[in-house]
Image (tube, rainbow, N blue to C red; front, side, top):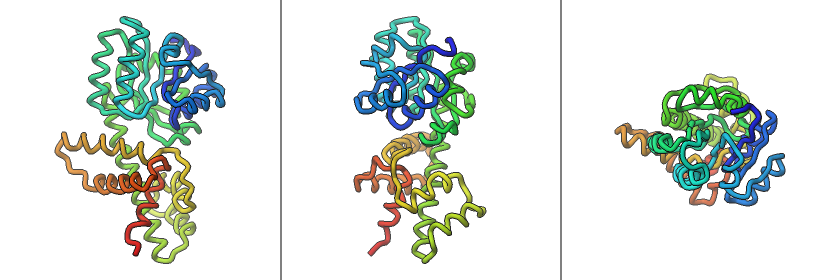
Length: 294
């Protein structure tokens, strides 16, 4: 794979736009497609080139980066769209950045490998704004030689990246990281609401908390958004709830209780019922403020 071949981008939501920004900034030509025409148009605003369809993109790009919502969509794009164009033994590289069911993505990798497609799992730790600023951390699952072949693109996408292990392991690591991250957000939101109800100035309290033993990076990324009610999405509530369901499914298979995560799921589901699914995940504070009110 040449260092400056056109890169295909399927899925131009928050993460896809951040990826486009990174790739274009690194000098790559980016061709992208999204089923939402408005998101495809956003790529053009960023300096990329819209593709007419997945098939159109597949004919012109290698590698292809997938940043769609769900495991179902990843399977659909790869098996029903890309392979239909590429056929057998193409040797094409696909980087799957979507947070997927780890067992299903591992099974998918085995299926497509027999047909000559090379799949690398590349979920990212970091909100879309962090990724766009070059602060995202790549979690890589799959063949190490393939990771080295894709290194020019990986270096453009991520500030740094780690080879976690086989396909599926990167997704497992992402779910475990997101479990901790989501609970950090929830703890911060609950602490802020508690401080407010105690009569403390929230801005001053957050400043003190940042210097305390309770510090977490979440305070920098989400604290002011929570206090000021600025919930423009960098990571949507509905997206995180999808990830939480994946975590709970994995935990059920392992017979591991995740009591704190079940509380978090309840809060996220309440936000969705209140029509807040497309807000930034810092908006969990809205539900915590609702609770306990007369």
